[in-house]
Length: 122
Image 1: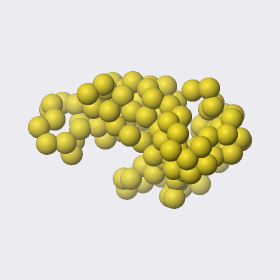
Image 2 (image 1 turned 180 degrees about the vertical axis):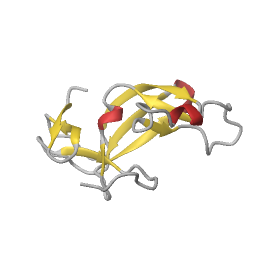
Image 3 (image 1 turned 90 degrees about the horizontal axis):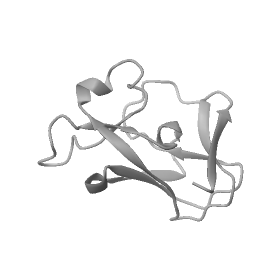
Image 4 (image 1 turned 30 degrees about the horizontal axis):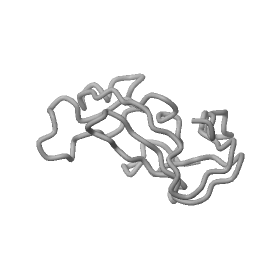
């Protein structure tokens, strides 16, 4: 994670920004996740940070349909269109973030949450 850091983003709270140039297609972070049950993902304190994990994967282990992401993964803000995307690595219990285009120093990295939003986008 040498090319990113987190900081306060006006109107959004915390977010992830580039501290070095990032090239299109570059993996900027790969971090572990903690799989959890979907009902646990809705608990206060977790609901804003849970990601879909295996709920749409045939034969996936029940009780692990969501995941809490470690590293900076829980700090990426939503945008549509976004400049980065999530990649799930189910066998390793990890997710990575890949740049969808070149990203300049100081630019916020964003992902498309790809779910109905529970907030008004900034």
